[in-house]
Length: 157
Image 1 (cartoon, rainbow, N blue to C red):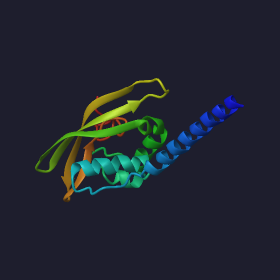
Image 2 (image 1 turned 180 degrees about the vertical axis):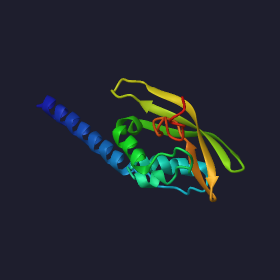
Image 3 (image 1 turned 120 degrees about the vertical axis):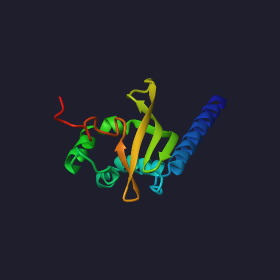
Image 4 (image 1 turned 60 degrees about the horizontal axis):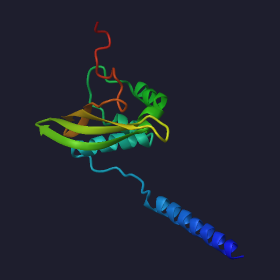
């Protein structure tokens, strides 16, 4: 009898801990929101968030105009076909440098290649932005948030 009470007490304690953990998880899991894009960091944040929300039109709007800019359909298809790649990636900001109408922002891209015991890789990369019509636009972004051939001369040998 005494053991049954003890076991029941342990099971009730575990149940309470599980309920508290789930409650905290769902309550603290705030939805990411768009921020002001008057600074290069805001543009980068909003671009990545738009990709995560699959709002490809909004994300495409952050691309700079230029030679060999991908068409919207090509842009959208790239992210639809590589969903797992950029969805398993995180981003944090390093330093930024603004000179006139160009900006360089260092980002740290963290990638998880799957599995509970896999390591997370961290790469320091640079995002290039330019100011067009008084708005910051992305000129180059590292993979997996960018196609390797965008803005490149595709016919150059």
